[in-house]
Length: 400
Image (tube, rainbow, N blue to C red; front, side, top):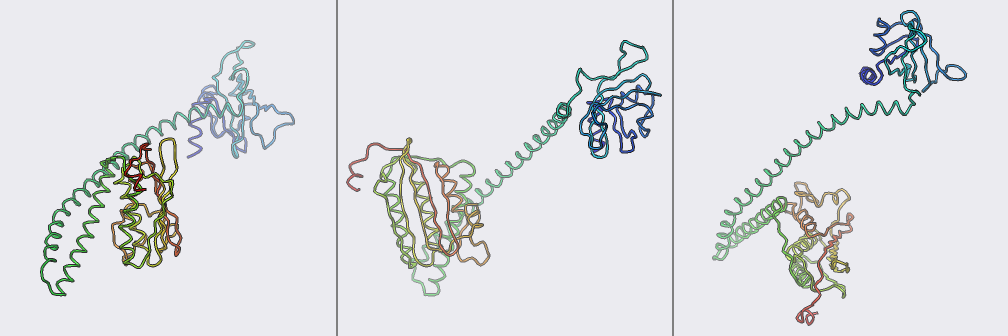
């Protein structure tokens, strides 16, 4: 197959080529050579038609790579004088003889196949063959490009359909779920026995957990569809972080954990950014830290760095929880992925929280990453750019 392809290329580039095997027989030749010999020489010894002279001092050696060759015809090749180059390809010799025979002065029976004033070098032959190959490869590449474009369009259409399906189903499920939760909340206000009270509490907790999952799916589909609009405003970033810490300090304490917050003194209180989305990401990370920490505590740290455009806030959330392997860290921000993905995992959830967090952080121009080790806890680092607000209000200055 490869030999047939090589012959096809040679017929285009060198119509008078000849390929000689180890026994000196012609195994293939160009149509121009067949025409001027007036017979098909394939299978015949080359010496039956030509006297071969390879111009190299010291004679012809088996390790020939690229030499000048001259073929002087006799018999059926009488009057032919072929010049070109020859190279070794495996156990064959390939003679590159490109031009058609022409009559020259000095005898009407003398015919010559000749190149330009100099025979092609190794690199020039490669260049000519590469030109033809480039044309073929370009055609193949264009075909593959068109196929890839079609496949991409189909994949995009499937992704859009999936997103619409998730959004529609989440919305449709959330509507009756809100009605069920409303009735369960009303029922919880009634005078119930201990057994009935326990069942209502389970109903409420399960419904709220399901509602959280549905809200996460809706948020995820909005982000995927590009429908999440940022609303940057001038706000108190420090107060936002303090509020989040206070919110989770209670639940951490109930779980027997500590939650500490340290804010560098040079962190500006006022900055321009979407505080709602930024706070949502920080909340998600802290919630995960509390969820996956059984003993010890959570430490939050806020720092900032001034840039030409404004500030870059860094929020670090370090816990003493179960930690993660390198493989788990690689997928923790992927959608619908949980650290413990077994059927017996202890923590519930959709596996969308951190994925949404990363996507929102990138929309904000920031990033979130994790450093962790099994048994040593995890550290989530959020970097968040914000525009500078020159005038700090008197109320904020007093609060500081």
